Amino acid sequence: MITIIDYGAGNLRSVLNAFAKLGYTTKVVSTPQEVYKAEALILPGVGAAGHIMQSLKALALDNAIREYINQNRHFLGICVGMQVLLSKTGENGGYNCLNIIPGNVKRFNEGLKVPHIGWNQVKQKQNHPIFNGIADETNFYFVHSYYCDPQDKTVIAGETAYGKTFCSAIIKGNMIATQFHPEKSGETGLRIYDNFIKLATGKNNSVE
Amino acid sequence: MLTKRIIPCLDVKDGRVVKGKSFVDLRDAGDPVELADVYYKEGADELVFLDISASSEGRDTMADIVERISEKVFMPLTVGGGIHSIDNIRRILLAGADKTSLNTAAVQNPFIISEGADKFGSQCIVIAIDAKRVTDSNPLRWEVYTHGGQKPTGLDAVEWAVKAVSLGAGEILLTSMDSDGQQSGYDNELTRTISEAVNVPVIASGGAGTPQDLYNALVFGKADAVLAASILHYNDYTIKDIKEYLSQKGIPVRK
Image (cartoon, rainbow over the protein chains, first blue to last red):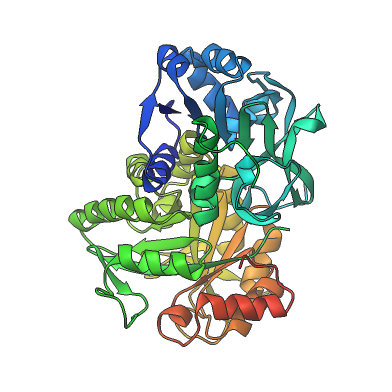
């Protein structure tokens, strides 16, 4: 079952709408038991990483998500749902995150307009079926003030330039995460979701 | 490179678009859902809906409309007009909007900005400023108006923008009352002054008549995005025309 975690994220509805538009049935869950049962797990997110960590902990979902990902099962994190995968964020005065991907979440430099809002290009750094049918340097919609800086650069699947080049997508095994919002990135964004589900359900696991 | 956003704005009253493009091939040109879909397909980068309903029934309708639009249109949606409380913000966001724009309510109670930013994130809180040039001011000054441009507040637009951002506003939607509806160009001095004073994105609004006007707002006004109403609704320009023009002049746009 395609399972979407509900911990009060503001963009839950948009994510649900996107999967519905693609014709997939989804299940919205907020317990560890249901997380373990997922065939494909999606962690949406918008807002502050510290708040999300608090909510996940309160629902005992932090350990459930960590365990799920450590079993190399199909996972997709979106925006702040990507940031919480790292070790620590500078947001909310500094906050420990899930520490699945060692590295820090940092604020964009002074002198830039923050949040980084709008459509920006994603340079594909890995040849991976999540990008099937999507041209390199395609524009996706971003809205965030912090970005992920993973220690292991080989997990970087996408890069985007804003002041500097930052990591805009991560892939490690069956764990995929994007800083941009596929559910707000038009038809190309929907394609990311479709590719993810095809990967997770084994309908397409080769690069086109 | 971050592209410059072109954002159509639709005025909605009691669930009907009252200021929006008259597309000849539309079944119902007053239906916000259908218009949103047209702009989505034309390549708009975001959409802004301004609810000008006077009644609470009208605003209930807006939430329903946002729900229907967000099922069909996968791009950022901002809703403004008639949002006066944290509950109003929550309701519109839960309906599927990505951002809410606050104007009068924020001037009357600036702490709605910090509370909203804390609860939903700064990116959900857009502060809309209606600014009018102060006659004979030197250096140039602009005064903030509320209640749909009816009521002068005595607030300086630059100071208000800086304060709103310090309270947590994630974006400024800046309308020049002098230029609005004139189609003779944005007030680029106003836009530049505010854009240089704050470190969040500024959306210029009011005055677009030609693609050149949008170019000027982005280059001379240093706007991060441009809101466009009449130029799209009544003129012969499509979003594609505008983006083509901007692109040829070296402005990064999403195509």
